Amino acid sequence: MRPFFALSIALLLAAAAPAQLKEVPPRFDIIHNSDLYPQRTPQETLRSVLTAIAGDRYDYIVAHLLDPDYVDARLNTTQAYYERLAAEQVAATASGAALRGPELQARVTDIATRMNVRQLADAMRKKIADEPDNLKDLRRFARDAEFKDAGETATATLKDVKDRAVYFKKVGDRWFLENRKEERPRAKE
Image (tube, rainbow, N blue to C red; front, side):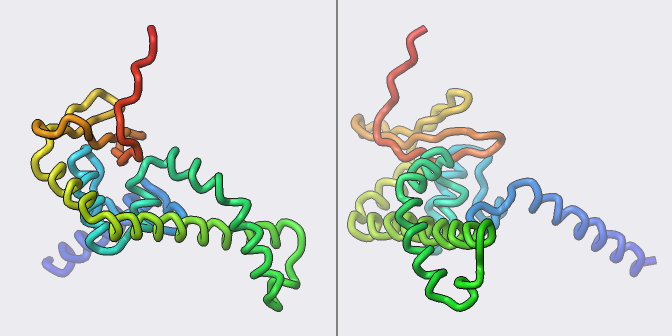
């Protein structure tokens, strides 16, 4: 009876695991990990960003923790440059020289996107290394901030700091860190 029970539990857990992976697809070939980097609340998202920084997972921040609209817009501005570089790299390889049409374009786009994401992650890494006070501030916000949830947006503020806040945006059921430093003006009604 015990082996049957253990087998039943194992099968149930195995069946549940793929469902969780399908919930949030990989982005830029980076698998979403809600166990290590939860995003159910703005507070969890900020802690997840700090966990990713501590683990040198800036690629994960780009793919899953930073506002996807910002990331897509930022990558879009540099994608043509990386596609030119990728085209040169692909053309220089024997297997790439054999590609034509849609296969060639797909390969170039894939390589360009990987390079583009890596560059954005490296820029974030460099900014944190060059300005360590920003990381100290993020840790302080995670520890001491008051979080105000306004439905699809949230703001983290510190009582003794009037000129800075951390902003969040909700997309679906996940919260993302926004890349901005000031409150947006309210829409006129």
